[in-house]
Figure (cartoon, helix red, strand yellow):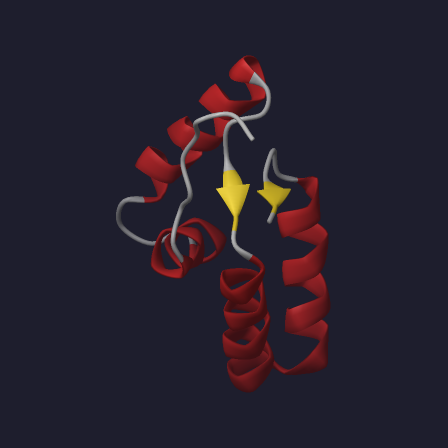
Length: 77
């Protein structure tokens, strides 16, 4: 595995909800697309994102989270 960045659950929630600081996470993700590989998502954090979104938004919110996260330049580890 190359050296890289592992964004935490909070950073990804900020991105998903377009909250304050969203732009910084967006820049990180955009930079990762250019660098190719270097953003990693811990499987535990992925599960936490799904849990939070399902708890507060239901099954459809969790499915949308999967769709968005899977489209990002993140390697799940």
